[in-house]
Length: 87
Image 1 (spheres, helix red, strand yellow):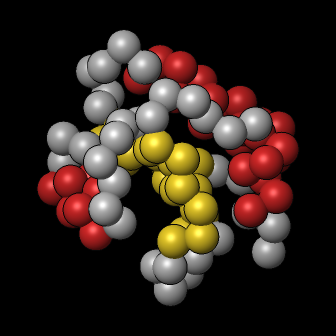
Image 2: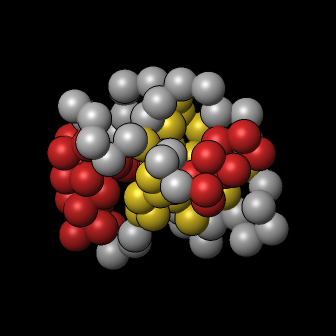
């Protein structure tokens, strides 16, 4: 399982999201991939998973299957996200 944040890096929320990813990594020894919606990969990922509100945090398995998503400004508690990433 992996966690991916789709966001606009030049938005008001960018710093909060980057801090969240950094703090999560320090606390849980797992990385959150930050994916810019301003790139081809970011836009394609948003389209593939039908993401329409940003930022979005997704938990995806190795086969690309979406297990959980959060869209909009409210992020899950780090413990909640960590529970989805247990392998």
